[in-house]
Amino acid sequence: CNPNEESVYRGWELFVYGCVYFPVTRDLEGWIREILEEYTGKGEKEEKYSKYSLKKFNAICKAGPRMRLPAIAELERYKDAPFSSSVFNVSLPDIMELQAESHPDLNVPRILVTLSETIIRLKGFTTEGIFRIPGDSDAVNALRVQLDRGDYVIGAHVTDPHTPGSLLKLWLRELEEPIVPNELYEDCLSCQGDFDKSIKLLLKLPEFSRNTAIYVIKFLQRLGAVENQKFTKMNINNLAMVFAPNFLRCPSNDPSIILLNTKHEQSWLSTLISEYKDS
Image (cartoon, rainbow, N blue to C red; front, top):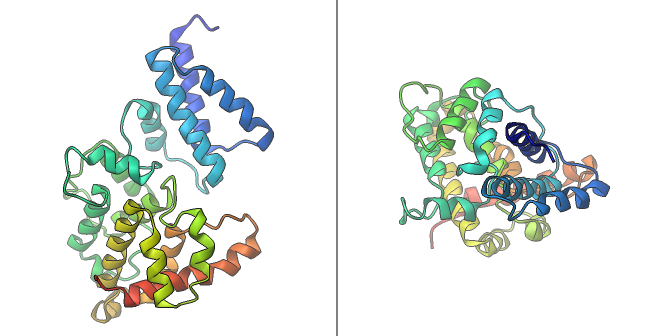
Protein backbone atom coordinates (compact mmCIF):
# COMPACT_ATOMS: atom_id res chain seq x y z
CA CYS A 1 0.00 0.00 0.00
CA ASN A 2 1.44 3.37 -1.03
CA PRO A 3 1.66 5.67 2.04
CA ASN A 4 1.82 8.77 -0.16
CA GLU A 5 -1.78 9.88 -0.68
CA GLU A 6 -0.88 12.23 -3.54
CA SER A 7 0.85 9.40 -5.40
CA VAL A 8 -2.21 7.18 -4.92
CA TYR A 9 -4.48 9.77 -6.51
CA ARG A 10 -2.03 10.31 -9.36
CA GLY A 11 -2.20 6.57 -9.93
CA TRP A 12 -5.99 6.72 -10.02
CA GLU A 13 -5.81 9.51 -12.61
CA LEU A 14 -3.70 7.26 -14.83
CA PHE A 15 -6.16 4.42 -14.24
CA VAL A 16 -9.02 6.69 -15.38
CA TYR A 17 -7.15 7.57 -18.58
CA GLY A 18 -6.55 3.90 -19.27
CA CYS A 19 -10.20 2.98 -18.73
CA VAL A 20 -11.40 5.79 -20.96
CA TYR A 21 -9.00 5.35 -23.87
CA PHE A 22 -7.36 1.92 -23.87
CA PRO A 23 -9.25 -1.41 -23.90
CA VAL A 24 -7.32 -4.47 -22.75
CA THR A 25 -7.14 -8.03 -23.97
CA ARG A 26 -9.93 -10.38 -22.91
CA ASP A 27 -7.77 -12.32 -20.47
CA LEU A 28 -7.08 -9.15 -18.46
CA GLU A 29 -10.65 -7.86 -18.28
CA GLY A 30 -11.71 -9.96 -15.31
CA TRP A 31 -8.56 -9.16 -13.35
CA ILE A 32 -8.95 -5.39 -13.81
CA ARG A 33 -12.63 -5.54 -12.85
CA GLU A 34 -11.69 -7.37 -9.65
CA ILE A 35 -9.17 -4.66 -8.78
CA LEU A 36 -11.69 -1.89 -9.36
CA GLU A 37 -14.45 -3.66 -7.44
CA GLU A 38 -12.13 -4.13 -4.46
CA TYR A 39 -12.09 -0.37 -3.91
CA THR A 40 -15.87 -0.03 -3.64
CA GLY A 41 -16.58 1.14 -0.12
CA LYS A 42 -12.90 1.88 0.70
CA GLY A 43 -13.21 5.60 1.21
CA GLU A 44 -15.25 8.27 -0.54
CA LYS A 45 -12.60 9.43 -2.99
CA GLU A 46 -11.33 5.95 -3.87
CA GLU A 47 -14.89 4.73 -4.35
CA LYS A 48 -15.65 7.52 -6.80
CA TYR A 49 -12.49 6.76 -8.75
CA SER A 50 -13.22 3.03 -8.81
CA LYS A 51 -16.89 3.35 -9.78
CA TYR A 52 -16.13 5.82 -12.56
CA SER A 53 -13.20 3.76 -13.84
CA LEU A 54 -15.25 0.55 -13.81
CA LYS A 55 -18.07 2.17 -15.74
CA LYS A 56 -15.69 3.53 -18.38
CA PHE A 57 -13.76 0.26 -18.49
CA ASN A 58 -16.92 -1.73 -19.20
CA ALA A 59 -17.94 0.75 -21.88
CA ILE A 60 -14.63 0.72 -23.76
CA CYS A 61 -14.34 -3.06 -23.56
CA LYS A 62 -17.72 -3.22 -25.25
CA ALA A 63 -17.21 -0.43 -27.81
CA GLY A 64 -13.51 -0.88 -28.59
CA PRO A 65 -10.72 1.71 -28.80
CA ARG A 66 -11.29 5.30 -29.81
CA MET A 67 -9.93 6.07 -33.23
CA ARG A 68 -8.27 9.37 -32.33
CA LEU A 69 -5.72 10.81 -29.94
CA PRO A 70 -7.03 12.76 -26.94
CA ALA A 71 -6.47 16.52 -26.77
CA ILE A 72 -4.67 18.02 -23.78
CA ALA A 73 -7.88 19.76 -22.70
CA GLU A 74 -9.67 16.40 -22.69
CA LEU A 75 -7.02 14.82 -20.50
CA GLU A 76 -7.25 17.72 -18.08
CA ARG A 77 -11.01 17.31 -17.87
CA TYR A 78 -10.80 13.57 -17.20
CA LYS A 79 -8.63 14.23 -14.14
CA ASP A 80 -11.73 15.61 -12.43
CA ALA A 81 -14.36 13.57 -14.27
CA PRO A 82 -15.07 11.11 -11.39
CA PHE A 83 -16.12 14.09 -9.27
CA SER A 84 -18.08 16.01 -11.92
CA SER A 85 -21.03 15.37 -14.21
CA SER A 86 -19.97 14.95 -17.82
CA VAL A 87 -22.27 14.89 -20.85
CA PHE A 88 -19.69 13.13 -23.05
CA ASN A 89 -18.97 9.39 -23.09
CA VAL A 90 -21.99 8.71 -20.90
CA SER A 91 -25.41 7.22 -21.51
CA LEU A 92 -28.52 9.16 -22.50
CA PRO A 93 -30.31 8.12 -19.26
CA ASP A 94 -27.36 9.56 -17.29
CA ILE A 95 -27.57 12.85 -19.19
CA MET A 96 -31.33 13.10 -18.77
CA GLU A 97 -31.06 12.38 -15.06
CA LEU A 98 -28.39 15.06 -14.75
CA GLN A 99 -30.57 17.75 -16.33
CA ALA A 100 -33.90 16.62 -14.85
CA GLU A 101 -33.87 19.20 -12.08
CA SER A 102 -32.66 22.19 -14.10
CA HIS A 103 -34.60 21.41 -17.31
CA PRO A 104 -37.53 19.15 -16.37
CA ASP A 105 -39.53 19.96 -19.50
CA LEU A 106 -36.74 19.14 -21.96
CA ASN A 107 -37.13 15.63 -23.39
CA VAL A 108 -33.77 15.57 -25.20
CA PRO A 109 -30.26 16.41 -23.94
CA ARG A 110 -29.62 20.11 -23.54
CA ILE A 111 -26.30 19.78 -25.35
CA LEU A 112 -28.12 18.55 -28.46
CA VAL A 113 -30.43 21.56 -28.48
CA THR A 114 -27.58 23.99 -27.80
CA LEU A 115 -25.35 22.68 -30.59
CA SER A 116 -28.20 22.48 -33.11
CA GLU A 117 -29.35 26.02 -32.39
CA THR A 118 -25.77 27.29 -32.60
CA ILE A 119 -25.34 25.71 -36.03
CA ILE A 120 -28.48 27.50 -37.20
CA ARG A 121 -27.42 30.82 -35.64
CA LEU A 122 -24.03 30.61 -37.37
CA LYS A 123 -25.79 30.09 -40.72
CA GLY A 124 -24.89 26.43 -40.98
CA PHE A 125 -27.88 25.83 -43.24
CA THR A 126 -26.16 27.89 -45.94
CA THR A 127 -22.57 26.75 -45.25
CA GLU A 128 -20.95 24.53 -47.84
CA GLY A 129 -20.00 21.10 -46.54
CA ILE A 130 -21.71 21.45 -43.16
CA PHE A 131 -21.19 18.16 -41.25
CA ARG A 132 -18.84 16.96 -44.00
CA ILE A 133 -16.00 19.44 -43.46
CA PRO A 134 -14.49 19.07 -39.96
CA GLY A 135 -14.14 22.01 -37.62
CA ASP A 136 -10.80 23.15 -36.27
CA SER A 137 -9.76 20.48 -33.75
CA ASP A 138 -8.59 22.96 -31.11
CA ALA A 139 -11.83 24.94 -31.36
CA VAL A 140 -13.93 21.76 -31.18
CA ASN A 141 -12.07 20.53 -28.08
CA ALA A 142 -12.33 23.94 -26.41
CA LEU A 143 -16.09 23.98 -26.97
CA ARG A 144 -16.33 20.44 -25.66
CA VAL A 145 -14.57 21.38 -22.44
CA GLN A 146 -16.76 24.48 -22.07
CA LEU A 147 -20.00 22.52 -22.38
CA ASP A 148 -18.73 19.75 -20.13
CA ARG A 149 -18.17 22.36 -17.44
CA GLY A 150 -21.83 23.33 -17.68
CA ASP A 151 -21.29 26.59 -19.59
CA TYR A 152 -23.87 26.51 -22.36
CA VAL A 153 -23.50 30.13 -23.43
CA ILE A 154 -21.78 29.89 -26.81
CA GLY A 155 -20.78 33.46 -27.55
CA ALA A 156 -18.77 35.38 -30.11
CA HIS A 157 -15.69 33.21 -29.58
CA VAL A 158 -17.33 30.54 -31.79
CA THR A 159 -17.87 31.82 -35.33
CA ASP A 160 -17.53 28.73 -37.55
CA PRO A 161 -20.61 26.45 -37.82
CA HIS A 162 -18.28 23.53 -38.51
CA THR A 163 -17.17 23.73 -34.87
CA PRO A 164 -20.56 22.89 -33.27
CA GLY A 165 -21.28 20.61 -36.24
CA SER A 166 -18.21 18.49 -35.56
CA LEU A 167 -18.91 18.44 -31.83
CA LEU A 168 -22.51 17.33 -32.38
CA LYS A 169 -21.35 14.32 -34.39
CA LEU A 170 -18.66 13.56 -31.82
CA TRP A 171 -21.15 13.72 -28.95
CA LEU A 172 -23.47 11.26 -30.71
CA ARG A 173 -20.62 8.96 -31.68
CA GLU A 174 -19.23 8.81 -28.15
CA LEU A 175 -22.46 8.00 -26.33
CA GLU A 176 -21.95 4.93 -24.16
CA GLU A 177 -24.72 3.18 -26.05
CA PRO A 178 -25.49 4.07 -29.68
CA ILE A 179 -28.85 5.60 -30.55
CA VAL A 180 -29.79 2.27 -32.13
CA PRO A 181 -28.84 -0.32 -29.47
CA ASN A 182 -26.92 -3.40 -30.54
CA GLU A 183 -29.93 -5.68 -30.04
CA LEU A 184 -31.80 -3.77 -32.77
CA TYR A 185 -28.86 -3.45 -35.16
CA GLU A 186 -29.76 -6.41 -37.40
CA ASP A 187 -33.40 -5.28 -37.51
CA CYS A 188 -32.18 -1.93 -38.79
CA LEU A 189 -30.21 -3.55 -41.60
CA SER A 190 -33.28 -5.54 -42.66
CA CYS A 191 -35.38 -2.40 -43.22
CA GLN A 192 -33.91 -2.10 -46.72
CA GLY A 193 -35.38 1.36 -47.34
CA ASP A 194 -38.90 0.28 -46.35
CA PHE A 195 -40.49 3.22 -44.53
CA ASP A 196 -42.97 1.18 -42.49
CA LYS A 197 -40.20 -1.08 -41.21
CA SER A 198 -37.94 1.91 -40.61
CA ILE A 199 -40.51 3.81 -38.57
CA LYS A 200 -41.40 0.71 -36.55
CA LEU A 201 -37.76 0.28 -35.62
CA LEU A 202 -37.50 3.97 -34.70
CA LEU A 203 -40.48 3.63 -32.37
CA LYS A 204 -38.93 0.54 -30.74
CA LEU A 205 -35.93 2.53 -29.53
CA PRO A 206 -35.65 3.26 -25.80
CA GLU A 207 -37.46 6.49 -24.90
CA PHE A 208 -34.44 8.79 -24.64
CA SER A 209 -32.85 7.31 -27.76
CA ARG A 210 -36.11 7.68 -29.67
CA ASN A 211 -36.58 11.30 -28.63
CA THR A 212 -32.98 12.11 -29.53
CA ALA A 213 -33.21 10.34 -32.88
CA ILE A 214 -36.42 12.16 -33.82
CA TYR A 215 -34.93 15.52 -32.83
CA VAL A 216 -31.86 14.91 -35.02
CA ILE A 217 -33.94 13.59 -37.92
CA LYS A 218 -36.17 16.67 -37.89
CA PHE A 219 -33.11 18.91 -37.69
CA LEU A 220 -31.59 17.12 -40.71
CA GLN A 221 -34.85 17.45 -42.60
CA ARG A 222 -34.66 21.23 -42.21
CA LEU A 223 -30.99 21.28 -43.12
CA GLY A 224 -31.51 19.03 -46.13
CA ALA A 225 -34.34 21.08 -47.62
CA VAL A 226 -33.94 21.63 -51.35
CA GLU A 227 -33.48 25.39 -50.95
CA ASN A 228 -30.43 24.78 -48.70
CA GLN A 229 -28.72 22.18 -50.86
CA LYS A 230 -27.44 24.72 -53.39
CA PHE A 231 -25.43 26.29 -50.55
CA THR A 232 -24.45 23.28 -48.44
CA LYS A 233 -23.93 20.77 -51.26
CA MET A 234 -25.43 18.28 -48.78
CA ASN A 235 -28.54 16.39 -49.89
CA ILE A 236 -30.45 13.82 -47.86
CA ASN A 237 -28.21 10.95 -48.91
CA ASN A 238 -25.08 12.93 -48.03
CA LEU A 239 -26.48 13.71 -44.57
CA ALA A 240 -27.46 10.07 -44.02
CA MET A 241 -23.95 8.98 -45.04
CA VAL A 242 -22.39 11.36 -42.49
CA PHE A 243 -24.79 10.63 -39.62
CA ALA A 244 -25.45 6.89 -39.90
CA PRO A 245 -22.15 5.99 -38.16
CA ASN A 246 -23.21 8.25 -35.29
CA PHE A 247 -26.56 6.45 -34.91
CA LEU A 248 -25.37 2.86 -35.26
CA ARG A 249 -22.27 0.86 -34.39
CA CYS A 250 -21.54 -2.32 -36.26
CA PRO A 251 -20.88 -5.04 -33.65
CA SER A 252 -18.32 -6.70 -35.94
CA ASN A 253 -14.67 -5.65 -36.27
CA ASP A 254 -14.40 -7.28 -39.70
CA PRO A 255 -13.77 -4.44 -42.24
CA SER A 256 -15.61 -6.30 -44.99
CA ILE A 257 -18.74 -6.69 -42.84
CA ILE A 258 -18.57 -3.07 -41.72
CA LEU A 259 -18.34 -1.93 -45.34
CA LEU A 260 -21.16 -4.23 -46.43
CA ASN A 261 -23.46 -2.98 -43.67
CA THR A 262 -22.75 0.69 -44.26
CA LYS A 263 -25.17 1.05 -47.16
CA HIS A 264 -27.99 -0.54 -45.13
CA GLU A 265 -27.32 1.76 -42.18
CA GLN A 266 -27.43 4.77 -44.49
CA SER A 267 -30.58 3.50 -46.19
CA TRP A 268 -32.45 3.32 -42.87
CA LEU A 269 -31.53 6.85 -41.88
CA SER A 270 -32.02 8.30 -45.37
CA THR A 271 -35.52 6.83 -45.47
CA LEU A 272 -36.44 8.46 -42.17
CA ILE A 273 -34.98 11.85 -43.10
CA SER A 274 -36.90 11.75 -46.38
CA GLU A 275 -40.26 10.53 -45.09
CA TYR A 276 -40.62 10.91 -41.32
CA LYS A 277 -43.53 13.09 -40.15
CA ASP A 278 -44.87 13.73 -36.67
CA SER A 279 -47.91 11.59 -36.04
